[in-house]
Image 1 (tube, rainbow, N blue to C red):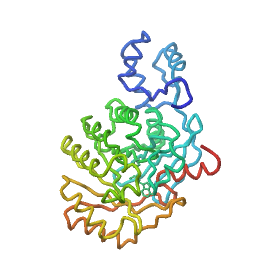
Image 2: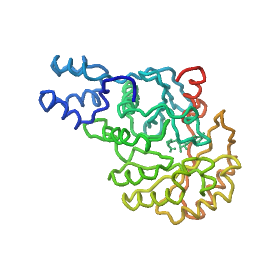
Image 3: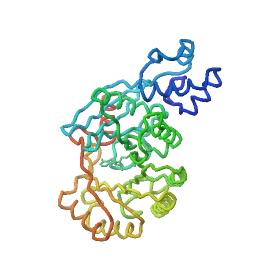
Image 4: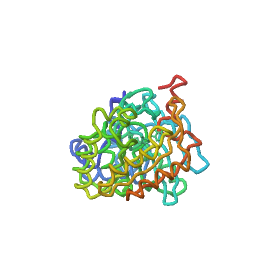
Length: 353
Ligand code: SAH
């Protein structure tokens, strides 16, 4: 938990506010007003909530904090991607990215300070896990991005939970975050425009399947078999490949939604034609599988090299020949170290948290 003793204003869902106003002897409609100030008008102080009586504003100030995301740095890529390094109240650093697409603005959020999953190619895991973010700290990243976009009358149109951290190891906060994001009286982001990505925390894939949402699920697969996946992603020893696929099948059967499998191509490690053939064999029988091929981002502490362009296309062709749908991720922000955890890792090198 963060060091502050008060909850954050963004930690509460509309239902939480309804309960809070009741407990505090306020009229029921105040809950909706507070929610509206936070997510529709997007103010950053209690004083700005001008249709609330002063006594109520004082009560709010006594009991809650706004999340302060202090901008340590921001980096703007040639392609319009902006990556922010924010410091939280307790000085821990997180990253948030705004990506410009032809269809709108997509926000990539962080769910944990650091990560304990230990994927060998990922910068987010270098210093281990410091702590979980609260739902309010995750929400604050989107509100902040929306406030910036408000200046040009643009909207956050989609969210990817692909920043630092493993969202399914901070499950409850992430579910609360999602609830507020999709609320029609809040930011009202379409469920189909939100994607949560997991390294494969099997029990929570089942839980997520049972939540009955339209939110997209992405699985970081990165290898076609147990042996290689365990080398790249130690989490595979905890939740083996077959169990992961079984959980994914359950998800598809339960929700009728397709899963995206993320596969970061690492030169001579998992990018050979035989890997593609094996992956195709595994996914061929999988209903509606979609593979997203990602050229690995160079991380200075890691020594993976990139797959040559032609080999990426060859990998894709093998999958498609086997009727496994595959796309190559358009890279954004690689000139500004926008891959997960790279900025924070650099920031930590300079002695920060
Ligand atoms: N922990 C979650 C959320 C992170 S999402 C997960 O593992 O899915 C970020 C995606 O980028 C994941 O698929 C992750 O495996 C991938 N990734 C991490 N480091 C990378 C790198 N150096 N190059 C390319 N992709 C990377």
